[in-house]
Image 1 (cartoon, rainbow, N blue to C red):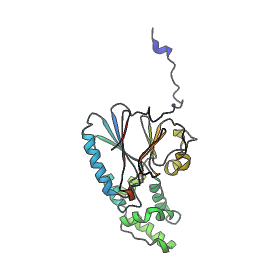
Image 2 (tube, rainbow, N blue to C red; image 1 turned 45 degrees about the horizontal axis):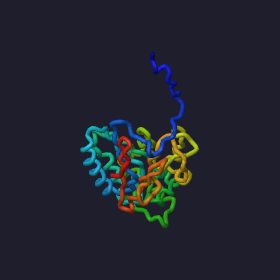
Image 3 (cartoon, rainbow, N blue to C red; image 1 turned 90 degrees about the horizontal axis):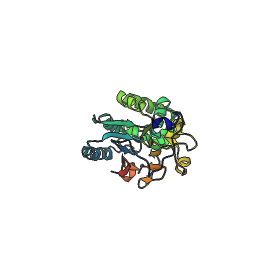
Length: 258
């Protein structure tokens, strides 16, 4: 008797069931290192990458994944250097995934139309401009000043940096985990999310206690220490002022902070 004929198969378009923190797992033989919001702190990034490299050497049997949750730029003093570090990563045996954060979205809006995107300058964009050698005085900015800053930034950015920003992705899935910058709309399935919510959402997502098809791993909303909730894991620990850049490590059912 062929028992497999008696087992009903799940339709391919049927959504997956909810996953809780306790039951969430990575695919067998895979290990993920997930890094929260960097915000121009290249010094912290360099130190953390060395710790990851040292840790991964002891896990040579696992396939490695390095996932960045976005917000590489703004606020800290070395946004340009952070992008250089990410572009220079040489981890042939690790898959690298770089997500788009709301600050990258805002920077690209400024590059597309400096006047319409000028708000970026006031929540950290001035620090990014400074890292490219462009100083602006926010208190007396005129439209002409804003246009000039946008032009100078386009001229100062290497094409590799522009390509990096354009190549960022909105989300990534590994096993029972959905990686995203800000969070998700609790009223929509994970495959129907609006990119604006993935980059910017806050209260509706943070206040939601129900389970999703995956555990949501995110940054964007700062907490003093990483938060492990039944439906999500938050790892933005405010690196630009706290001096704490967080890395979450996932393998099997293990969920630890490096």
